Image (cartoon, rainbow, N blue to C red):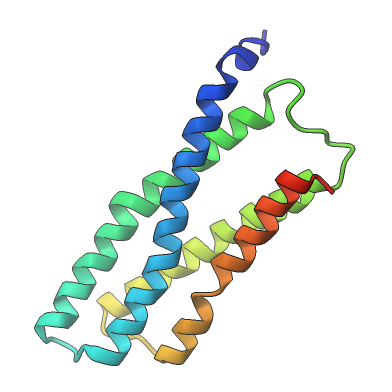
Amino acid sequence: MVYFLVDIYPYILTLHIVAVISWMAGLFYLPRLFVYHVERAQIGDNLDETLKVMEYKLQRYIMGPASVVTWLAGLVLVFTPGIVDWDAFWPYVKVFGVITMTGFDHWLFQLRKKFSQNANTLTGRQYRLINEVPTVLLIIIVSSVVIKF
């Protein structure tokens, strides 16, 4: 019954890749917006209000839907016969990376809410360090799938 997934595999994989790219773009960009927000905006000024809108729309209209589509398409791929070798180590590394990336995404949501409430406590330097997290996770996830260690 699940063998129809083999027929639609290229389409689901394409959808998954596009969604991942969209999600990653947001994960790279949002912490950079936080850097500008903390270093250049003053509470209540035009830049502060503009960045709040940009951060909200990035999460609500790009990152949120992209993460959902990434997960849904990824789960379809997981259930496609012959795609994942659960006897290998790499699927578990990927699962760890994706779950960690999702946790990171949810943490960014909380950080954005703090900005919207004028309650940010982190510095520009801290946001620059935070901005490296998705890169490290991306390397782990992609390496696990391509190298299949």
